[in-house]
Length: 157
Image (tube, rainbow, N blue to C red; front, top):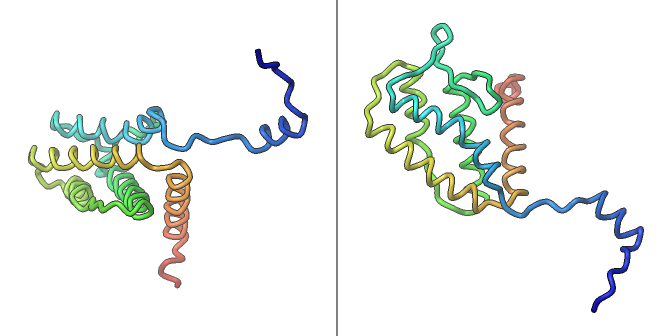
């Protein structure tokens, strides 16, 4: 019978200073990342889009409302970054076109929504196969790009 010896204090200190991260995304991470999109697709299938003044909005993962177009464009950009880092071909152009159609008030067919739903399912598979470090790096790069755009530094360069 093996004896359960207490770990050395150095091992305990290293384990608490550098906790082990899971290597892949969890189902909870996926629900957080894809929940707003699933709700948006359900609203589109029902023929409903929420507006705040002239701006189309969607429910975010934290319960607040955000604009559909910037949210969807940022999400697609981040997913394409993840796919590029994993060397997986992924074109999310139809999702961008869907966002632009919503913004312009153009009628959307069920076929457009079906294409978007199929792409989101493909993105789910990429997301679940993605290591956490790659996902976090792509998300940080997207946040940096958003801040550069907000500060107007892209035009200055």
